[in-house]
Structure formats: structure tokens, C-alpha cells
Image: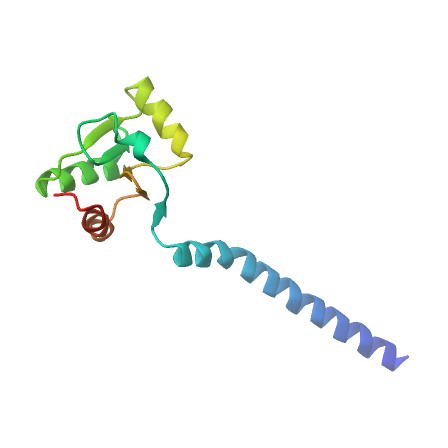
Length: 132
């Protein structure tokens, strides 16, 4: 009888450990994957810049503070970019939807996109895109 209780306690303990491990991994694997993947998404995004005059396109909204910060940063750095307001232009919203992103701002070159605003990441993208 005691042997059976010990087995139950051991099985319950093992089940709890596995559940805790599953919860921990379930919460952290997406984060680790994004870190491993890096901040940039590579691909052919030339459709988002070829019909515009400049080599970079910024998708954003008029009310987003991060979008405003991105615009200010690019302007102060002397970088010319296509400013696409997705809340004011149906064409801009359609192009933005093609990217499949859920957040703004999105900075697009012909081969990379960067979601969100970070001065360090913007500088990296500008160097890699050879925009200046």
C-alpha cells in the first residue's frame, strides 16, 4: 500500500514539473525565436519602394507617437523617405496590409523591413540599405 502512494506522489511530482516546464517554454520560445531571427525581416519588398521617389518607405499613422518619433529621426538625419499614412490613404493601407504586419511604424527598403522604432536599429538598416 505504501509503495502505491509513493508511486502516486512521484507521478504527481513529475506531472507538476512537466507542466511548469511546458508553461515556461511556451512563454519563452516565441521570444527566443524573435531574438534569434533578428530585428529585420528579409525579402523582396521592392514593390513598396519602386513606385515612390525614395529608397525607404515608412508606414505609420498620424496619431502614433512611435511613428512621429521615426519621422522626426529620419528627417533630422537628412534621410529622404516615402511617408505613407495608413489611416489617411487607402492605397497606403492596402500596401501596408500586403506586408502582413500588425504594428506601426514599419520602415521598408527594397530588401528589408523593420517593425517598430529604435534609433539603433534604424541606423543599422540605413547602413545596410546604403541610404544617405
